[in-house]
Image (tube, rainbow, N blue to C red; front, side):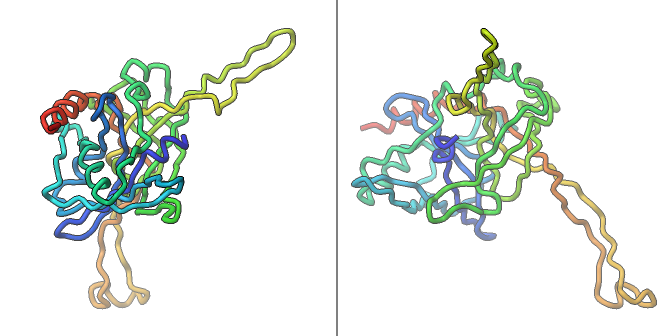
Length: 278
């Protein structure tokens, strides 16, 4: 889980309407240029510039470096299925930016292709099985150490079924603005109980593997109509400047795109980098 934490990155996205926060994470498809940054399409849509805070190790010390990508640096690859809210950016463009700042050896931790759960892998998980989400809700993070926030939850629907016919599931976990693009993982400990000669042995959870189950992209919201009443019941709300309205209340359910949809980017990323290679 520590490795998965350091593979995430906070995205500060500037649009004409203001500055917003999102989450991205690095995936390694293998090969010389297989590194890619994955997030949601809606996170980067309409961006004028995007700033990342990455950790670079130089001379044995960690340095937290801000990388600003302007519009001309955008080479985002959208998922070929329009309804799948995923996109990725080749790590090549980020590496070139960091190299221009004097950090030529940048090599972030990333999620390997074999750590991504396939659809068939989800069959062994059930509702109420544990999962966790890593990201930057409301842009909250450890600024000094450049660390994200961990949240614990459970599968809220049967993971191997496509919720409402889409390649996704629901997770019972709190999500807020800034959580979009957060990796959702499971800790595959292989926990086992073995009784032999009256001895009980349990697999150490620290010897398990983290697997990527999906990518959070949307919060389920409860819409509640609120009627504002004045303190003095003799006055109308309109007379005292109060208005009724609708309050958006998070119901702690996240819509999560299944992780295997990320694999659709592999050939796209590798072929794009092959064309760019001198």
